[in-house]
Image 1 (cartoon, rainbow, N blue to C red):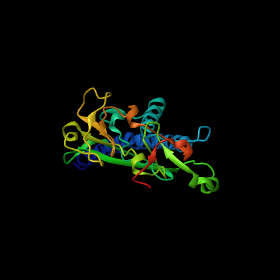
Image 2: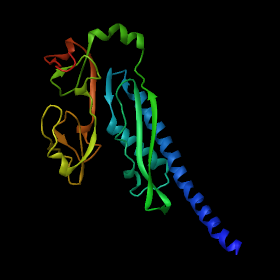
Image 3: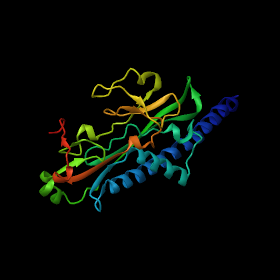
Image 4: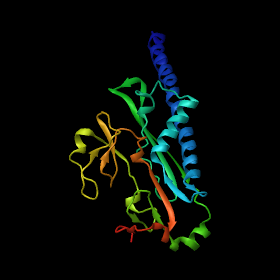
Length: 236
């Protein structure tokens, strides 16, 4: 009688414990992918040969997915594979690359109607930006521009230079306005789908994180090299 009672509970506990191994494995793999991606972004943040700073959120997403595909990952706990893992909470501003991965990990057995647990993992790595003393000595003589922008900026941290990518539903985007009060138009990359990507000061919504419209290249140049660009009203 006692064995008949204990055995089912023992088997249940064994199934639960064994089922947790894939969850632990995917967390380890995601952490390795985040570490690799953060390191690559931190090192490539400034191209000293061309003296340019590249804000690379979209490239970061692609680097992460490429790493995970190349090294393999435990997909049994991810409903939609790598598409289940979002890096949209990541922050590339300031002196650090902070990558945050959010996803739902499926439980081996449903408990009280709960089939998955939300998981949030984060890594932080300092950007390589060259000599701090050299930048301090020459910072006043430099400004920041983009290839197509009409203004120059006093700092690379100007809000107009930050992409601040966020995902929203297609039904919601028509009622949203960017921080300049403008509406969002469809980008040529949008070919359908219920979720789109927008930025705070952008004028388009995008269907693909790898779209060139979600990439921002910032050049650090002298004021003379800024040409006929005007001073940014936000940071000057």
